[in-house]
Length: 169
Image 1: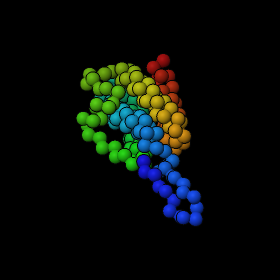
Image 2: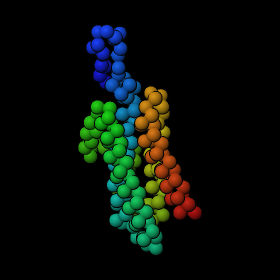
Image 3: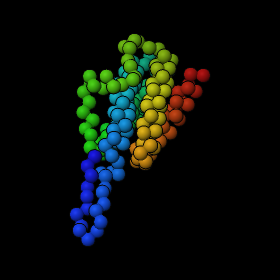
Image 4: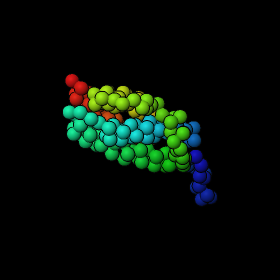
């Protein structure tokens, strides 16, 4: 990050860091956000696939729930990418780069409705862990904006986790 020095000669020289964070402080945050972005992008594609290919008695309910979920993820993808831009980094993601960074995987198997829900819950765990790591990095540097963004994501994810878990009972 760039450092700006006051040019007013009547005042003592004071240094200001862009956004108040050093490059090293933001590097850990951005690495975590890039991983979150990649995980979200793969998760989004999985949810679309589940939405299109759900079959059976659970069709109407899960078809709608998967759509609700991928719409939320789509919004979060944009929020994360724009947060990365705030730090002066371009989230230049090719599909290859996304798949390299993502911890969420697709296996291409045809899944039953219950298996799809289990897969969503497994991916929620990965996203939750990723968000907690990013939250730790933001707390360490005092980045309250990223902290708030992640806290909002966590709150919503934990509620949806409860709902999908309850569905399986």
